[in-house]
Image 1 (cartoon, rainbow, N blue to C red):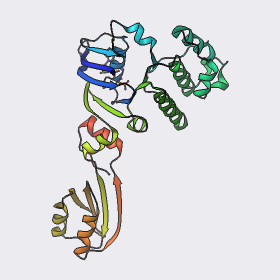
Image 2 (image 1 turned 90 degrees about the vertical axis):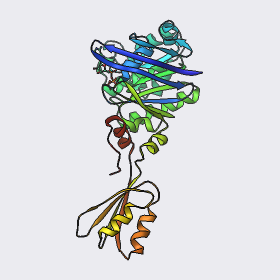
Image 3 (image 1 turned 30 degrees about the vertical axis):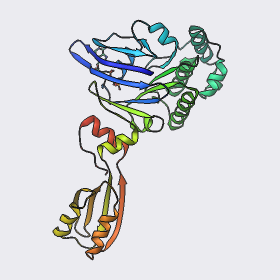
Image 4 (image 1 turned 60 degrees about the vertical axis):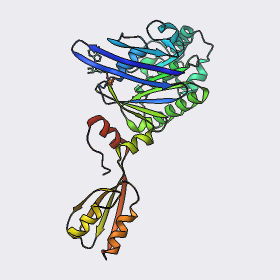
Length: 308
Ligand SMILES: Nc1ncnc2c1ncn2[C@@H]1O[C@H](COP(=O)(O)OP(=O)(O)OP(=O)(O)O)[C@@H](O)[C@H]1O
C-alpha cells in the first residue's frame, strides 16, 4: 500500500496556480525526497496532505485514508516538522514535549526524545532563548512523539549547522529502520541525496522527475568533464575526438598549451588513447563528475547539464 497517493492535485490561490495536476506516490517504508526550488509548491502539497488547506481539484490519500475525510486519524499517526513554525517562547523544551505527548496520547519520555535530538541539556530552558538550530531540534523531537507511521519533514535542515544536519539525517535513517515512511522536502539536493530512496523534483507545481538519485543522474547524462592539457592540437584531432562513441562534446580552451575539454559519458580511455595514437603528448588531465546540484539545476531550470 502506498503511504501517500497524490492524484491529479491542483491548487490555485486566486490567480496563482501553485500546483497543476500533480500526481505521485510515496511507498510505505521508503524515504522520499521532495525537492524543488522556492515557490515550486512543496509546502502547498504538504498542507494539502495534512488537510491544512483544501485542493482546487484532485485527491490525496494518506496511509490508505482520504486526506480530507480522515485528517484527524492521519494527523494522529503522522509526525510533522513544519516549515517556519515557531516554538512558544515561555514554554521549556520539556513542556513543548509534554504538550505533544499529551496531544498524541503517547507515553514517550521527554528526556529520551531530547537526548535523541541533542537538546537534553536545555530540557528545562525556555524556548524563547533558543537559537534557530535548537528550535529546529525541538520541533524534530516533537515530530518523533508517538512513533509515527509517517514523518513529514518540511525543510528539516533549516537553521542546522553541518553537524546538526548530519544528526538529523541519522534520525531519519533510524526512524525509517523502525518502519516509518519519511517524506522529506528540501530545496537542497545534497541533503536528500544521503538519505532518500527516491526523489521527486517539483518545478512550477508540476513533478518533472521521480527516480532514485542514481537514476536522476543517469537520466540527465551529466557524465564527466575531462580536461586534457596537450602539447599541440589540430582541427582534425578535435573532429575525431568529437566523433568518439561516448563523447557528447569537445572544445579547446587556451592555446599555449592547448587544453582539450571533453564531455564524456563513459570511459575516458578512448579519448586519451586517440591522442596517444596521434602522437600528441598528454601533459596533464583532470576529470569532474556532474554534481547532483547540476542535475537539480537541469531539471528546475531546463538547462543542459555539463560537469564543470
Ligand atoms: N497563501 C497563499 N496565498 C497566495 N499564494 C500562495 C500562498 N501560499 C503559497 N502561494 C504561492 O504558491 C506557490 C507555491 O508556494 P509554496 O509555498 O507551496 O512553495 P514551496 O515550494 O514550498 O516554496 P519554499 O521552498 O519557498 O517554501 C508560490 O507561487 C507561492 O507564492
